[in-house]
Image: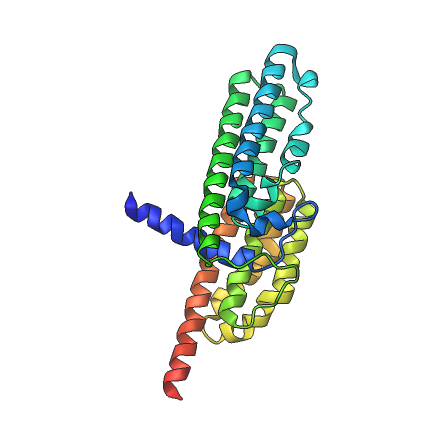
Length: 268
């Protein structure tokens, strides 16, 4: 268990360091509070409790009075009303996407007039994601206090090395899942195309020298597999599965480029 926790912490730190170093806009201004996480942890926790309470009231209303009275459209307004919305978005996008998935899980179950037990099951998934998100923000606050987490910047700087570029590509793909979970498929697709054209294509030449088949596979993923998964309108997990597979390939690509660079330095 301790090893698992350490690995989770390392993964979160890596994600946080990269995500906080670039501009990530929520639906509106991010807010300076994200650069002072420790000072706002109490507020974030109250907001998570408030969200859970509002969703619980919604489900109670659905059980007592039906779908129309529940006003399920409010789930998005509830989430976007809190500061915690941007606190998790700039620190750990995968959980941010899971929250959106949970919100729409509750909304769509109500809209489809599913049995209350099924709505409650979706509610439980949402609550789990929210508490996981709060834990992630608390960990990010700790790293921020120790000076290990950069402040969120208002301008985005381009990666300067092939390895950094591939890491940026991976994080952009996380954003694709998040936008798809927000039910913004056109924006998700736009991120896919922009990432391919403005980031991945920049390292293709060097990577072809190492593994042309890997480049061809990723090109297909960017231009066919992932856009098709988005346009098909399947579940968030299906889109996430494509992205996870692509990120594994990108890790392999990064290893190849780093190995080639190390061998080049040894020669000179």
